[in-house]
Length: 299
Image (cartoon, rainbow, N blue to C red; front, side, top):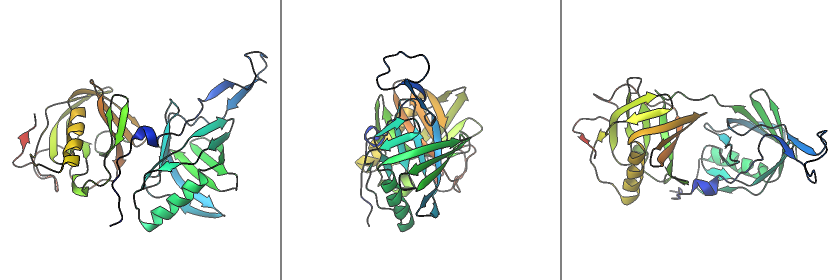
């Protein structure tokens, strides 16, 4: 098996720094002039938008991006990229419509051959200068050699009914990726029901409970679930996930990314994933492999 275990800090992965959109002082402007000649105008307002990577064209050949490929920039000037497997980051400098990228860094998980090939080409294209062009909700990034990325703005996913795969654990200003080698059947995830409930897996045990949504706040009730013991890495992940789902918490959805943060700064980052056969309504009765018979309340 080629998959390697690696838990990587998001603060290391998300190194891609962009200048803020709008008008910024140009070199030697000294704040004078008044005619706009001493300013640099950014015409690629990409921050605060979740971008879905649709395809990449190399040498005239266009290849569709692996499912889930995305590139995101936050208002603080950090960003992360993923092309269906590894998490990727890079340093960047924005001047007008030019984005100059330093050599990107990436986690080192093994992927299927098709995804690996796309990711390798994308990494090569991200090492250098790109020209950005925005047209409505479509963004095109062009390399110096003429190769291109085609991206489109992601629409926010629905909170309820979406299966959210937990990818990041938050603690104040620290963000850490969920270990990549957790067993698939126990990978942390959650689904909110329209009836004010939530169910999923916290990294070892399945759980269900109340989740009342009002505005940008979710108030979680004490979760109930199975009481299995798992290896240390899984139990550590579970404790972090459950700490975020305790009492009132704020949430935001940007494209396909959900962030939940409790009042004490504990939180999770999650990504919308394709629906599975598990139920999304309520928590009683059978729910695929996540039945709730014989469960106990955590706490």
